[in-house]
Image 1 (cartoon, helix red, strand yellow):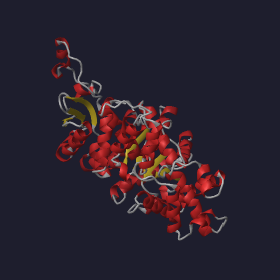
Image 2 (tube, helix red, strand yellow; image 1 turned 30 degrees about the horizontal axis):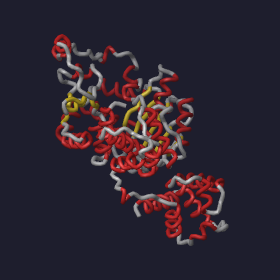
Image 3 (tube, helix red, strand yellow; image 1 turned 135 degrees about the vertical axis):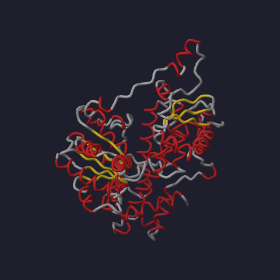
Image 4 (cartoon, helix red, strand yellow; image 1 turned 90 degrees about the vertical axis):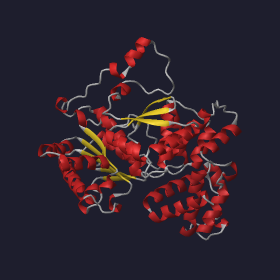
Length: 482
């Protein structure tokens, strides 16, 4: 991982706390860092419109985040694709430090006036299907190999594998739902990558619902009849269509109409459809009933918040992929304190790495106290406020919540009103502490297999039973903010 990439990822994570999902996705995510030189960060804006909006509304916030992360004043320069020097900048790789001095001849070669512009392929010269092969909008890091499986996403992973093996015939449509930042986009793009890898001739398109709507609106408002027909043909002639965050079309009558007809045409032709949203189809407000029934006509799979073991695995996988390293006790500390979603989890990892980097601190595995102090500072956790959840805390919270006595949880009673709270306490003990199954079982006068059974049972109930899910979430919040 380059320093520049790490800095920009941290900016994204900081802005994620300030902006809503639409703002972040439409205006910040499209930006690409090119070069950091002389305290100026060069950003590719992807379009002149995005550049104008960023300069007007978000430049000050971006510069504030950069200056905080780099611990010195940083300004940004927005590079518009229509500017004369755009191709010159894009022709060279991103750099994180000042380049070596150039000789005079090299300076002349680097002069924007002497760099020939890259030629764009005219629309008419594109090969058939080239713009629809999906690669232009796929993140190369979002592969099945890089997707970390766990209890929270195992079913969604399995259905994705089934779709990859038999697109258009198994689980069509596939509807993946879950809260923001849990890996829906990763899994969707991984499906696209794998199908293209298995058969490069297939037309595969991954697109967000916002981009779909924007493209459709532009064609409806300004397009000719031929362009409108080309738009419809584009989406109805592909082999695999993946639309992310489909919830945003709810209430948009024209968009829902277009999605409805596109869905029908692709389904009748046995073409694969994959959709994602933050809720299951029936819970999406203002979505037409005819779309709800079609979205539910295949397979729905949810992704839950990852448990402690999965969070640790995600962090270890992220470090391996980015060639970075932290002591395992620091990794577990991050996983213990950042539980909301994968995006925040990976952002916390990058923040800790950045703090080590900007303090020019070499990581010594044996210097636990200093390493943990830096990790706490990076995560804004003061030592005196650090909360370590113990099994005693969990037992106390569960007994109070269900109006039980502590000895009820250690008794041999199998009454539902006691057995289920006992299983929930074991489940919380496994997810919120670092204790082994044996240690947890010992506290309840049970063996480790009983704890395993309890954890598995509650994991299933959390997904299927809204009442149990609410109880578990309430207890988790109570324990983390006591």
